[in-house]
Picture 1 (cartoon, rainbow, N blue to C red):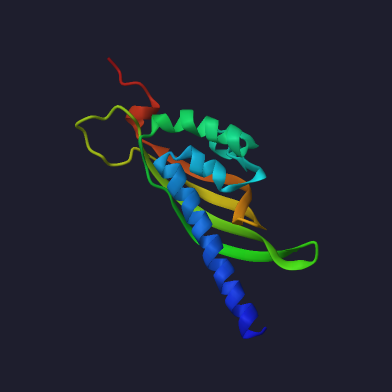
Picture 2: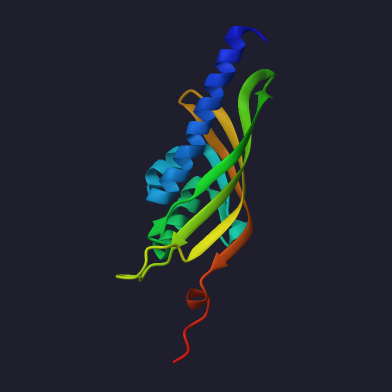
Length: 161
């Protein structure tokens, strides 16, 4: 591999990593317009393993808008990123596939004056498929594979009165 190709690969890895980070930040901040902008025009997301929906980026952003109102505090971390580049129409490096683990601590709404500690935490693995576009790297597909979740007993079951 030449130094020029190695430099281009490093720059692509940084750009892909930045896009994955932007994904996490837009979800945590509830910036659904920016969320939609991270995807290709035909981009899709699949949150079914976490109790959600599968659909195009606009449909999923609408679902997230409503669902995330339940969790005004959220801060998910995407770690252990494994990036693989692939060809598109025989031109190396136009696609990327990222597998990454996540941990997502959140706080249910309605806890004024109480601890700000999370009372719902889940974790699993993301699979991201990316495409190089004229506007940089974009998400073509996001698939969530939730592996576990833990919620406080008080939120899973109504308190006895």
